[in-house]
Image (cartoon, rainbow, N blue to C red; front, top):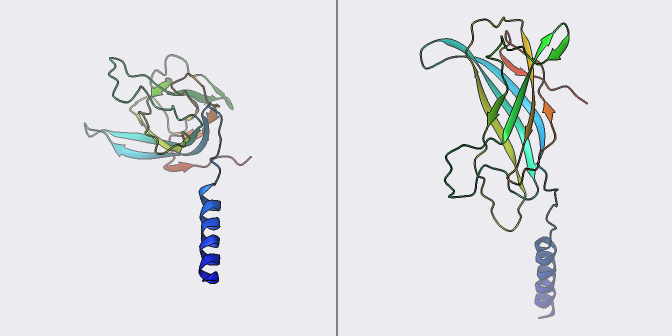
Length: 179
């Protein structure tokens, strides 16, 4: 009988120890990390040869309000919450492209409403954005990079990250620089 009671108490203590695991607290401002940018040759819906870029980044949001709009809300406008600024390499430095390069303009995307499960409000995950390059006057040796940040529903802005250098004659991933 003593042995059963001892095993039961030990089991309750072990369950209690695991059940009381502390929830990781994060600030309400989102945080992002660049993971990768992959460029591929592809064909558009009209049969034209184009380039496609896939930008991959990781995010964390402590109060879990990342994503556009409230669940079930109807809006006439789509609110952007991912903001990309493009930079083009010129004479060894990255600069904002001139207006003649209209196809290299800043872009906005939307992360949809994200559902949280349980009591922990923290959201973490990976986002993959697809960017199509339909152009005729960009050269294979042209090089660009993006600066990127996100905003949550409360207007909290994340840190700004930069991609690695992307040149248009490459096929596959660019490699992030090590710190």
